[in-house]
Length: 205
Image 1 (cartoon, one colour):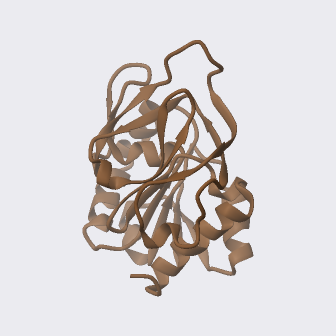
Image 2 (spheres, rainbow, N blue to C red):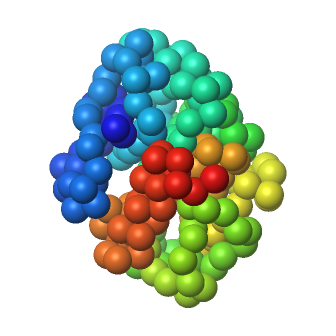
Image 3 (tube, rainbow, N blue to C red):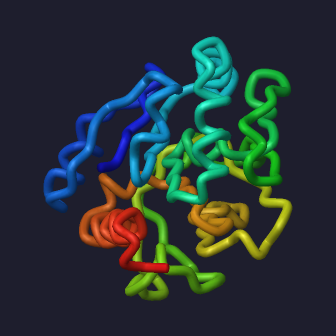
């Protein structure tokens, strides 16, 4: 069973439909004491980093997520959810994140369209079970104005180019993040979610 963490800042419908397509049982969860009941957790999200962390702390979800991480089970952050895994963000002031992965979330800078919205090509960096079967040059769907400056480049599984070198997929052990929306990224995204599901089932080590 996968738990989808609901902290009031994510459209969960398309993610739930993707998991239904994969035939994997899932539940929406918002109580920190319940997080350890699941074989895997998804942390989705859209919106402002600071608002998200304020709610997560107010409901003790930050403690629940950290306790879950210590059990060495899979956790996947999606879009804002990926950014929340890192140390801090400069969005509308400096805000501390969950600090599970080292890095800083910064705004795109330059004379080009912001937010970054649309399909972008993935360039693979390191091997990991999460990207099993992913081919160089596949495309994923992005919507974001901020991106992560990853401190440990061993955590990079894939990048994309949007006037900056953007961390697209990151992982440290069983903790992972995708800056794009896999549930909106066609067969590529479904394959990546399927790999996550297999990790939750213990098929991929």
